Image (cartoon, rainbow, N blue to C red; front, side, top):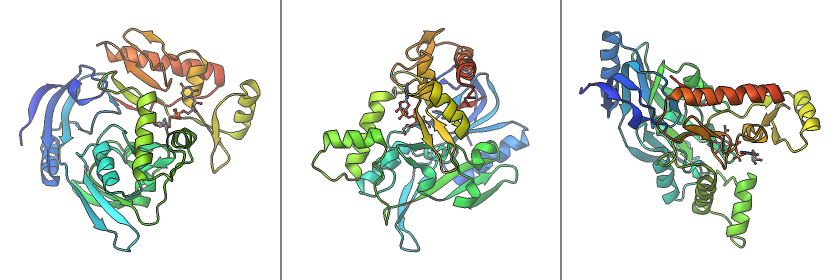
Amino acid sequence: MNIDHDVDLSPYTTFGFQQRAAHFVEVSSEQALLEAVQYAQGQSWPILAIGGGSNLVFTQDFPGLVIKQRDKRIHYTNAADGSGTDVTSSAGVQWHELVMDTVGRNLIGLENLSLIPGQVGAAPVQNIGAYGVELCDRFASLRALHVPSGTWRTMLHDECEFSYRNSLFKQYEDDYIIGQVTLRLGGTLELHTEYSALADYLAAHYPDKTPDVRMVSDAVCSIRNSKLPDPAELPNAGSFFHNPVVPTEQYDALLQRFPDIVGHRQADGQYKLAAGWLIDKLGYKGLRQNGVGVHDRQALVLIKYHQTESTALIQLARQIRDHVFKEFHVSLNIEPRIL
Ligand code: EPU
C-alpha cells in the first residue's frame, strides 16, 4: 500500500479548490480497498472515498485518508432469468466510458445518461438521472464495503433505498464504499425519448428516422454540451441544487403569481419545480461575483471562474437559497457534498 501524505486535492475534484488531504491512497482491488480502510481505522484516521470528484466541494483540508479507486473493469453476462444483459463495472470506470461501451454494443438502457461526469462507484450514491431515466431504473445490484464492520456486501435494488438524487449511500455517506455496480440492460427495455428537449432534438435532427440507441446518446450529448459547461473549462459540479418538491396547494398559489413557473406533477400529487427556473427568475443567470458565478445557459449550475476560496461559492449558494426562499417560500437543497 502506497500512502501519500499532505496531498493537494485540487486535481481530484471538478471544482478544484485547493484543499489538502493529510493522507491519500489509490486502490485497484476489493482487497486493497479493505486493507486501506483497516489501516486508516487502526490509525484512527477519518476515511473519505472519492470518485470523479464531480459532486464534491472541499471547504477545508481533510484530516484523514482519502481513497480513490482505480479499478477499471467492465464485463457482460446474460441475466440469469433471460431478461437482458447484465453489465458489471468496477467503481473506478468513468461513467461516460461505461455508457459509451454499452452504446457501442447497441444495448438499450444508459443512453439518456450519456456524458454525466464522475465515476461508476458514485453513480448509485446520488442515483444519477437525466432526460427521464435514473440509475435506479437500470440497477440490478452492487458490491459495497460496509466500513464499520469491514465486510463486503452484495446489495439488491430494494436495499439501496433509491429516490430522486438520493439513496441509502447518500444518507449514510461514510458507512459504505461502493466497489462494483451491476446494471440490467437490453431485454425488453425501450428507448425513452419523451422528455421534451430530447424529443424536440430528435424530431429536428432525424425527422424521418426511428431513433436508436446511438442517436439518443448523441442527442443527449449535444443537448448537454449546449447547456452544461465542461468542468475541464469552467469548473463546476453540475446541478448545484435539487429540484424542490412542493405540495399541490403551494404549486397552485405559485402558479397564480407566476403563470410561467415550470413544475412537473409527481405520482403522489406533489409538484417538482425546476430550481433553474426559480433562480433564473430572480436574475442570477450569468451573474459573477468574487471569482464564482451562475452559468449563463443553465441557472442551476454554479461555476468557479477564477482560483478562489470555496467560501465564495458557499456564500453565493446561500445568497441564492435565501433569495429563493424569500421570493417563493421554497427551500433549495444543495446537491453536491460539502466537506
Ligand atoms: N429553466 C429555466 N432557466 C434555467 C434553467 C432551467 O427557466 O436557467 C427551466 C426551463 O424551463 C427548463 C426547465 O427549467 O425547461 C428544466 O431545465 P432542464 O431541462 O435543464 O433540467 P433541470 O431540471 O434544470 C435536471 C437535472 C440535470 C439533468 C437535467 C436533464 C437535477 C437537480 N438536475 O436539471 O442533472 O441533466 O434535468 O434531465 O435534477 C446534475 O444533476 O448535475 C444534472 C445536470
